[in-house]
Length: 145
Image 1 (cartoon, rainbow, N blue to C red):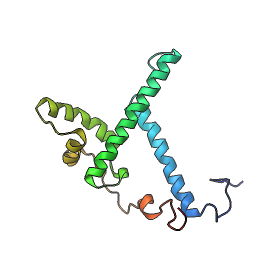
Image 2: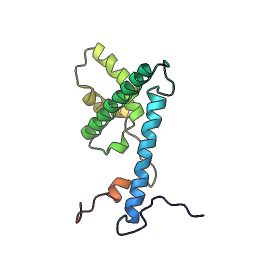
Image 3: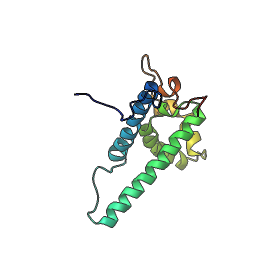
C-alpha cells in the first residue's frame, strides 16, 4: 500500500517544499474548527430548527472572523507574525478590556491588547528550535508568482 498526500505526482508542478507548506497550512483549518467548537461554543446547537441552526452557524463564523481580524491587528501592532498570537487569549482578554473601559480607559481594543500583551499572555512562547514554515518556505516563487 502507498499513501499519497496529493494526486499531483509531477515535481515540476508541485515541488516537495510547497507540498510540505500546504500540508502545514491544513492544520490552520483544523485549528479554526477547533476554536469554533471549543472556544466559541459551536459544539452544540441551541435549537433544532433549521433557521436557528443557520443563525447560530452564521453568527459564530462572523464572531470568529472578527476575532481573527482582531488578532491580525494586534500582531501588526506588535510587529509579529500572526501565528505567534494566541487566538484564545485574545478572546479571553476582551473581558479585561471591558473592565478597563468601565474604569475610563478609552484606548481602542487592539491598542489595549498590544500594550498589555505580556500581562494577558497574548503572544505565544517560542518553542525550542521552532521553524516557521511560512518564513522558511514561502508558497510563492519570485520568478513565477
